[in-house]
Image (cartoon, rainbow, N blue to C red; front, side, top):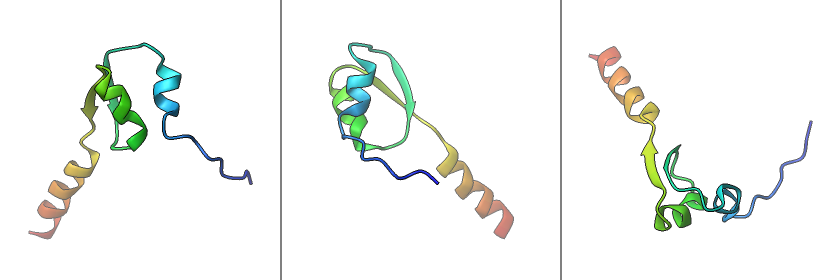
Length: 59
């Protein structure tokens, strides 16, 4: 078993460098600086899709 590691909040921005484009991501705070620098957030719909499934399954 590996030990957890601490990842600095600005790690994604450092990793992406000056790249600017569309990024499929969650709401992790480390991406926010990149959004201010011009990266466009493309959210994934897994959480929303699950709610529609639950609604359909329960009614």
